[in-house]
Image (cartoon, rainbow, N blue to C red; front, side, top):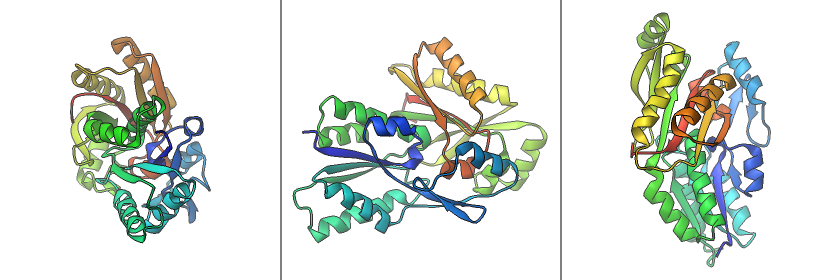
Length: 289
C-alpha cells in the first residue's frame, strides 16, 4: 500500500533534516544571483543570500521545465515506486504546469504501465506548501494509500492559511505586487502590508498597518479569526533572515493558542528573491481562504 514516494519542490521550504527523515524527493527550482546559478544541488547559505540582497544584489528566478520534471519522475518510477507530487502554487509559478505536461508525456509513452503518477497543485507557497506536504506525509506514514492521500490534499488544501508581511515594499514592487508610488509612500510612513494566498494560489495584499511590531501582531490576530473549529497541533513559520521576529511570532502563537509544535525555517531564496529580507509568514489550518 505504501509503495509510493511523496515528492514536492524546494519552494515548500522544509528543513533538510525533515526531508531526509521522511524520505521526500525534491524537485528544485533555481535562481541566479550575481551571475551564478544556484539550486538545491548547488546551494547558497540563506543568510548569505539575504546579506547580498541587503547589499543590493537582485536575484532572478526560473521555474522547473517539463524536461526537468520528467527526469525527476522517471528516476522515481525506475525504482518501481508510484509518485505523488505536490507542486508549488500554479498562481505563482509555471512549475505545476510543467510537471503536468511531464506526467502526460510519460503516460503517453507507456514506459511505466503499472506505475501511478499523480500531480497536484498545492495552491500554496513556502511553508504553507510545506504544511500541506507534512499532512500528506503523516497520512502516508499512518498507512494511507496514494489515492487516499491525494484525495485528502485536494479536499483540504484551501484550508492551509498563509499570513505574510514584508519589511521592504520595493521587493513587492519589483514583482509587480505594488506600484512604485505605493512602495515609496509606504516606506516613508513605515507602512507594512498584510498579505495572504488566495483560492487561486496568488499572493494578495489584504491589509496594511504601520510599523513592524504591529505587522507581526496582525499575523497572529488574523490567525485567531481563522482557526475556529480547526485543530492545529503544529504551526509553521518562515522568515527572510529575521529569526528573532519568527521566534517572537512563535511566542505569541504559543501563548495565545497553546500550540506546542513549530517548524521554523527560512523563506527559501527562490521565493525570497521576490519578497526580500525581513519577510515573515505564518501557516496553519483554518477557515477557507
